[in-house]
Figure 1 (cartoon, one colour):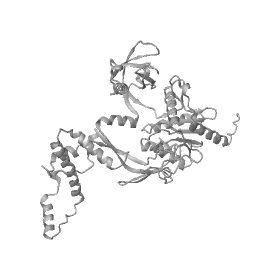
Figure 2: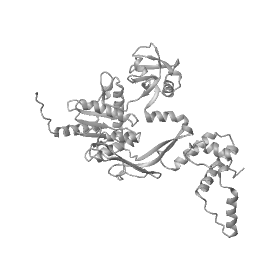
Figure 3: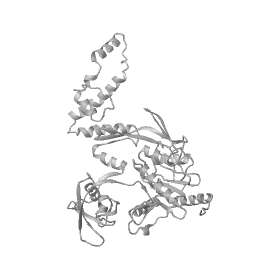
Figure 4: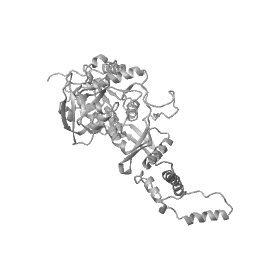
Length: 471
């Protein structure tokens, strides 16, 4: 019946998505209808045909009624049967679309695990990184992660996975090999998974079983590996120039960075390159902690939103790594937390920024549990501001002349065209995997070269250390 707001409709549809953050009114909770009717009668008796202005509570109820009535009509009367959940999820996504904010989105139950793994760089698995060989239709191990079940089982780079849980990879279906393989290899920790692989030119299939473990991907990497598989953080051993590449900002990143800096300090580091190219961001708190490692006072970043009062984070002197020149590398894909760090170090004259103008994302998202955590809502709640007060966020319609992103320091812009970007990524992937044939596609990284050149000059300017005399 049109216009009837049924309690089951409000509870099942609206209550499905709200985890205690909104005070939704059901039919039993609404102000009594006689009071409302008496207002309308009084208005008519006075000759006033303008409907009385609704209170915020009444307006909210009326808007929810539109949604619930529409849902009920579709559910009851549409020509074919409908999936109620899909209808409601589409409505939620429609609301988010209306915000015209690409960073706010709804994450359904099927997407929650993948979302959490991407943010935390942590998952249950056997610890191998793989690629798909289109020509051979095989899954190739690019690298086993040190200390992982696969590493302990002796899996090596170049091994070809041909079956998982007794099912041949060739039977997964054309175009579904990688997706299916990853889904079967990843999963609940402690559960045993088996697969068969070939090594080298041999056609013999070796079978191995191992228990999944929690795999935590390192986010602080170097430029090359040592012989034992660990990262070599020195990019110029003679001049003691260190190189740290940060891939994401997870809850562990600041600790990883601190450990690497402690090691480099012990090795006599004289200059540091912090590579944030292709870093999409991550946790705000991680960006604050990493910035605080390099400046000893002053503002790091501030945030402010409609329902979030201004908050300012400042640096503390304890634990600061100083006394050496720094470069931050950024490119057009450095975003969010990457821009907080690079802007902070640039504004405090702690580092020179080299590369390309960054992405331009100056907004903060809060991830809220919906359905008691079964699904999530990622919603923009605030904007952040760099210490200088300059804008970072690139709004729709902003052109290259507008103020947004983090720009390289004057004289230090080094751009890559699309072909160079692709070659860089291929080279980087090969080097990370320690794959054979890397030397055949070595890439001239002019952005990194510029950073090394700058630091060599800065180190040369530093006063010579006094010669130590034996007692």
